[in-house]
Image (cartoon, rainbow, N blue to C red; front, side, top):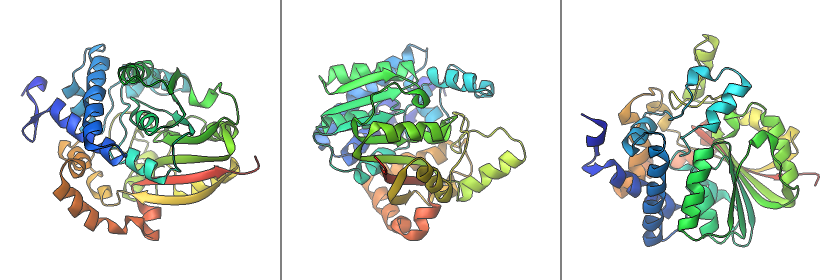
Length: 334
């Protein structure tokens, strides 16, 4: 079957991705009508970005569902700090795990009237939702030029004047200190060469009463154990979601707490997520495995079943052993 002929559950890839993103936006707080309208615009701009690289939306989705990213730079070349940055400069990933945005927003303080920084914004799903939810000012930064260009086009289409975008290295920010009420750093810190430096910068950028929402894969579970074993055996250690972005480290709740404390943060709350997906994600590269991430968002029946099965994700056990960690922290000594 040719790439252009792919169908997902009877829909074209574009129809499927519009519906998936619409549900994600709806879970992020938009009405059903507004969420679908935004999803259509979002996917249109995503297609424009991909086409400039000679890629189709189907290329993107198939690679995404298999856990990989599409980049102009090969993973095998990401062996030095310079090459890692070059990878991300041309990165066309920019789409976080479906549940990341709703959980990050659920853990956030009220957004209306706030100044927000979205670090590693990708195509900007989180930035767009913050702007639409009446944040006073949203600053979205990413090292990838095509991702930032895509977000700029979407913001213009929506006539959003409260988003500013910058192509900027997170570890070398040039922003004024003490200006943000809220910083999001979702699925980013594991890719950084110097996460401690980045967290010190985040601390300086937050107002004394500000908050940090941070998410990252949790190394204290089946996926983390597998990655640690592969590292010991000297296999190429990339993302636990499959071949794609170079993932330089995995944190555990203990190591992340220690790092945040060292950088002047106190954790207000920690939440685990997607504990059961540990079992499926042990076998990256499977299209079916990738679909497990999307189907619960698209079908209410599957979502209800999964909700019942994973109710314990909010327990103390799952906080420490979920596939992902979500942390709400605030700065001390400001």
